[in-house]
Image (cartoon, rainbow, N blue to C red; front, top):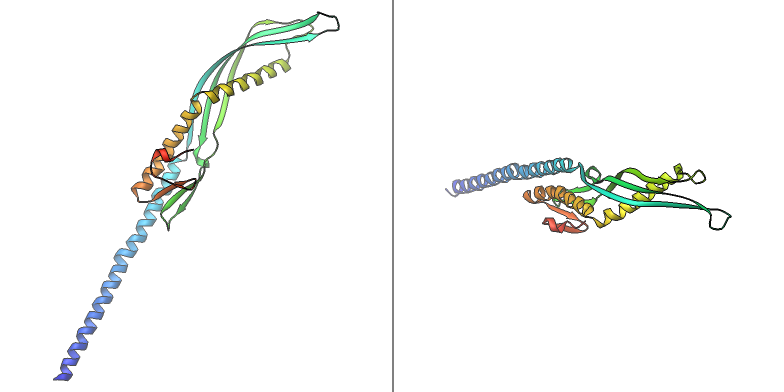
Length: 209
């Protein structure tokens, strides 16, 4: 009788052991595989969003400048010089661009984080339309290619100073942040972390460029 009881007891433990193995491998199959698949799916979504963000962001503005150009050619005769001058009107279309395809990222799958490694510097393009009025010169001091090149350089320097004082660059950065914020929305929704400059980014205001 004890013998049969022992067999029943052994059978019970064998069944429990088999049931435990079934539960263990079932858990591994349904949960471990799904977790891995979920991370792969999240990574694909993030990499796709990086491609979507990687475009050219351009902010445009218009500037006008009026300057008087003067040049004097002295002679050996005291009080005698040959002068030339002109009123120069510059209308310029200016663009500030960020090429987001050049932004470098690091996707850390293990820690579920995306780190922005570097953001390209803005590209400023100035297309001036220069017109000359009230041009005065003499045969001994006439306008030449040197004068026109000099005027063009002066005009661009003056325009750059005005651009720096204007809101054009800050507007361009705001558009840049707006584009990068799309990455923030995706990472947050997936439970990932977006990082930049050693800091975790949780809101738009954390993206200080």
